[in-house]
Length: 293
Image 1 (cartoon, one colour):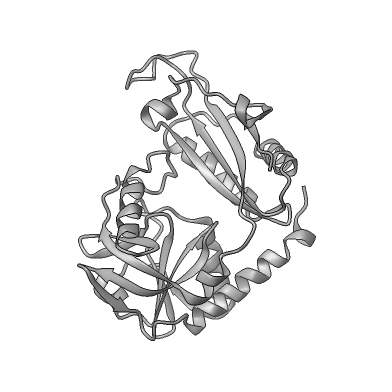
Image 2: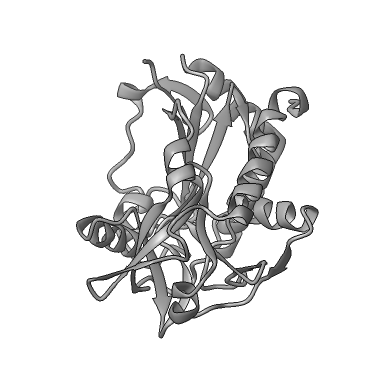
């Protein structure tokens, strides 16, 4: 399996893709990133991901001087260099390289650095999508600008590993009892046939998959409320699920809180979750004939 890397404007071998240790992404986590899924050598929601990448750059004042269409073309070329059909591209942009200093504003030669590479993800997570996962409820210890897809992921790393140590697949985060999102996912719940998810403000990342799900639900005639809900409401939900580009849509069938395990409703995937999954699958299956570059 060969891996090529897009390093600024060049395609290089992985072993040749070196980064200066004074890069601010390495020193400070001063940068942003995206993860973009592809199926059968076609990207899913590529433009939406790149627009969000540009928005994340703008929010932390990194100049974004690339044309979206040129970047799309570069990523398609990168994807086509790999010898597998299904996977994802990781792309990040840092503020650039300079002597270590919190203040960067007077550095006139600072140039943003871009890297991207592909990762094989040959199979969709069908078993998890059907059987569901356990979630571990814990405090949201992250910073207050979760709307920026920044390289600063230590809070997510710590809570994800905390969940793993408890036997859960995902950490379900809350602030003062109000559920925000997962450590690497958005979180939805269903109650009385209404779909709820936290509003897209500074406390969550407005996931691309999250947006697709909301559109699907509306097209399916499912009422959607972008309204925050509490831990207690989640524990009493009729259905719950997580969403992300790689893990897709996974039912939450149990929740761990204070070392006690709670079953979500029947402990099985719910009917509304399955409807949304089916519609999502239909979108994926349409990619080859609908995708054009």
